Image (cartoon, rainbow, N blue to C red):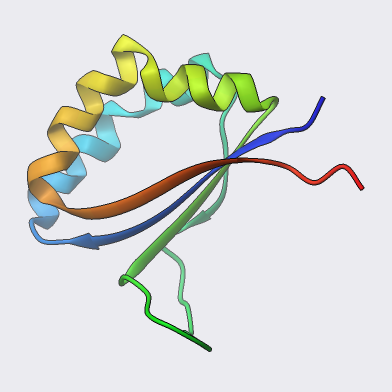
Length: 97
């Protein structure tokens, strides 16, 4: 069974409000076994366009990644994030090749 990943690209427009989201999302991420692989680290755009912040989160399974997003815990945290920036988020299955 492949791991699941959240890949997010974010432009934070209100850092103070965004910090409330970061404080609130831990409950859901802990519950679903999330592990941050990239969390707003330095980046260099080599091709195309990119938002100012990138995040990659690994989950034990694709289903766990999907369930986390739809969970009441994450949806409550997400409501805090929405007014704090602009985000693109995809959930993908890991490669097992």
